[in-house]
Amino acid sequence: MSDLNNPQPAEKGDYFFAEMEEGELVMKPFCQCGNPLAEEYYCEKCRRQCRCTDVVCADETTFRFIQDHPPFKKVRVFLASK
Image (cartoon, rainbow, N blue to C red; front, top):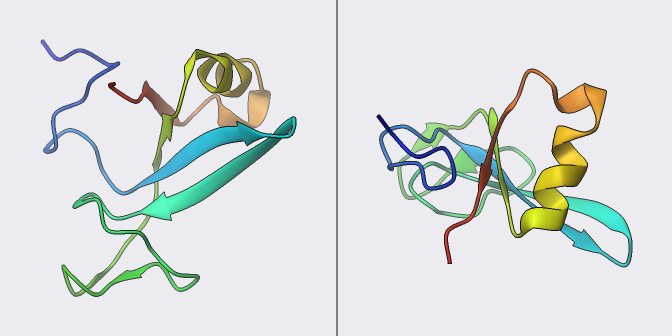
């Protein structure tokens, strides 16, 4: 069984990296390979169109913020490993 706080690369899909900045939630898109994505969500490294369906949180505060908000109820949320 996998640890939801530390997903294996094959378990984690394309994702948003989420963090709180000055009290605001900021989410940046990444390919499952770890490559940052531009607006069109195309990964130059993998040469594929990405679809971010997971959220990886920078810290516990961000993790709790996302878990407590209804719009994120159907999204898989992970805590970034240190």
